[in-house]
Length: 489
Ligand code: ADP
Image 1 (spheres, helix red, strand yellow):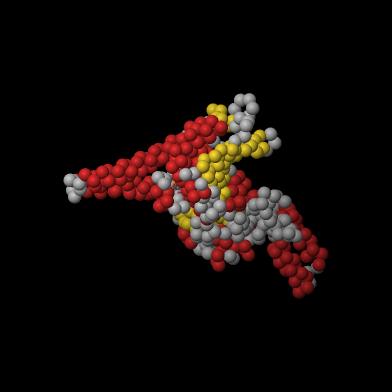
Image 2: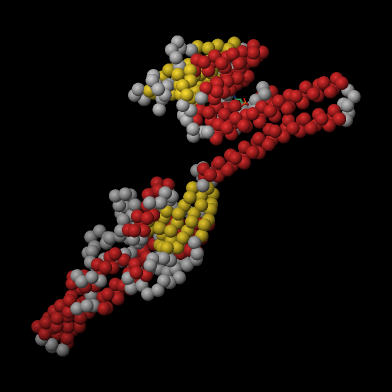
């Protein structure tokens, strides 16, 4: 067995040639090694022989002892043959002597065979993890690999098999996991270094972040027959990998959110400060300018107020995202409330606000005020951004879902400028706006659809958006209809 500890694709590529590649087991992962197809099981004692097979090899089976002694027996047979030919020793003497040697070899305790076998096993004892170790690694929820000290993958747990299909037992780990930091750390740990934690990022196919914990595994001496001491180098190296992509994404979102919120607040604040300074200085004695500035200041202060209201609203909804609402709400009443509240805005923008609702009751399980907020946001957006179409329609229809359920599809349709396709997937992100200037002019905060999404998540409902430039937009809330009696699950 090679003592090589550097784990590079080129060098560790020798690995599979030294030890046979073993077929995947029923679970798709490696199983215990066995002899190559067609080989005599007793004769097979390759470098990958396990501690389990050691027991077989040094056991009492006469056949196995003879197999292990085959080269010695060949040599004795050759010497006896030479004695018969050269020294005219009677052939039957030679045959008898050989038989005696065979019988002794098969029956007497054979220190030599045992120590030979142990020597081999010592060399290869750490080549395959035992069943207990595999079972333990399989029970872990994160991807784990057991690697021998040459860098050859010896076991891949089930999670790792799914997440990193390129890493296969019998191959060097570096064939499937290539980050240099990981391979260098593996190299150090396999060479006798302490456990290490390293992280790396990948750019393709998508940006992802990983962390790996690389720990030496030293088997207890009892599990290594014939092993004399602990030694510096570990028997195996356990590599467990954590996918931190989601965590990174959340952290980035949080940081972006704080930066965006600060920016949104700082702009009106700067404007307010500027006007106050002007009123204290140059415009101190100018009543006309004072009136104009005070109006702008009021507008900026209202903008800050709206933003703070939306931020609070968002955090309140986030706090109870896992609390399912349980009241029965009549969507007809929600629509009526929103239409009443937005009629002045519709008149101001000269948009016809229409409804088309079924006669039957549209009952859902939810929180009334939140559903009013959802429909209010969607209808207000339709009025503000779709005003050029001159018409906004709120409609509702029932669709069957599954075997016996149904959902209400509450739509807000406008015939305005519409939204280009590339913006659609991002509309519900906080502070995402198709046109920031237009949004600010319309007193938008960029948080309306984020609030809608959070409320709908809490209601286990969803938002569908259909739009194309020049054809207006349809925002549809799909929410499960309440069952006839009692609340829906
Ligand atoms: P805002 O406070 O800016 O209105 P929203 O989250 O409610 O924030 O909406 C995000 C963006 O989506 C808006 O800035 C606007 O660009 C776009 N948008 C929303 N509804 C419509 C619509 N009916 N037609 C066109 N664009 C829309």
